Length: 152
Image (cartoon, rainbow, N blue to C red; front, side):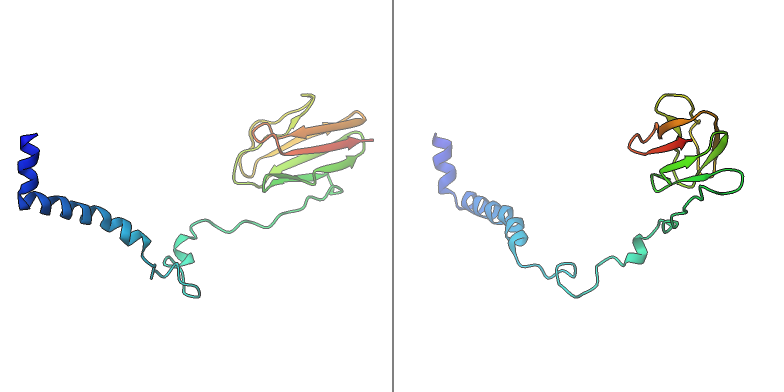
């Protein structure tokens, strides 16, 4: 108790406490001050030009498969979609899927009647549909990707 009373009387102790309080609150006051930055000012360019952050190649345009192509329908996998997602073919038709995406995908029947390995960019998978019926399929890596082949 005596020590605290002696410290309170000394002027350098008061200066230390007041100085610490001011320097401690300085960042708080600076954060609340109005901003003069370029990003916060409407109408001025961003601090980082878009060309500096555009390191990815632009997306390729979606290629639409021709279900009536010679040799059988050529379906594509692109932008996390099977295109076209729903086709109708005759029995005995060979359907070919081509992965035009930048990530691996699979073509897997819901009833496990057919399935591909993981297809890298540019890989293809073909299956001959010999019996009539409706075959739903999906990507086992990205199950939200679905499609259907109807065989007549």
